[in-house]
Length: 283
Image 1: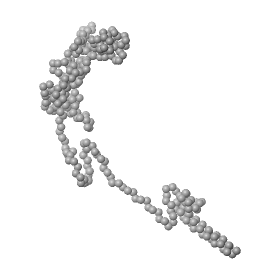
Image 2 (image 1 turned 90 degrees about the horizontal axis):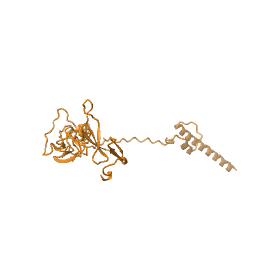
Image 3 (image 1 turned 60 degrees about the vertical axis):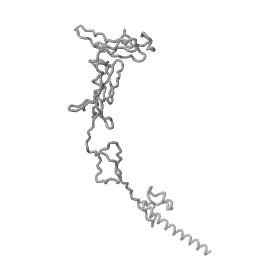
Image 4 (image 1 turned 90 degrees about the vertical axis):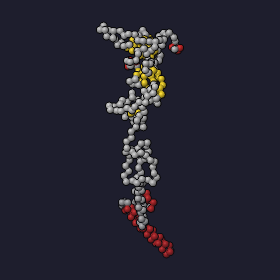
């Protein structure tokens, strides 16, 4: 009987000692996190109630310090372009591997466009800097190089009119070699713009652009002035094409799809109402 009583006394003492020690640990741990209201003294409750992202502090165990940040060395941008601008690297020492030899970039170089072409100051980077004279006009004081002419080409490059020839054709020169080119029907070569143009914009060219057609002499008004009224004529047996004459200058025009030219109305109408000398499909 005495042994049983002594056993219960020892068990009660052990429980009291365990609760005292455990409560003190839990309470001190929550004081570290700033909490004074401890409801659950179990060790697992300490993990569930601690602030998110903080380390558990156990008495007697040091908390590991946060790792120091790692700084990567600064790397200069890669300027891998065809014509880089001068770069000032300050006191940076050159690398041990020598770079390919390049001309100094603080020096100006003079270049010449091919004969017959002009420098285009408006050309963007990586664009060809030379253009035809019709596209770029030389400024005052500009000096042109001596032409390297051939039998048919005044310059090595360019477009030129045929002397005493057909206005509807022109010469294209490349590296001094001439090639005869022809403008689209109804247009003539204009040396002022180095391109094909309306005959009315090329007064030095004969109005007989079309071998089988010449514009009639324009009528005059009551005051004797030449009328600028546009008169239209069918071009040969063509149903869609017609010639518009103004002040004696012809222009070859064409009706859109599904329409044909009607001389009586001087306009393009439905092709079903226009009779042609030959069917349109056979022209």
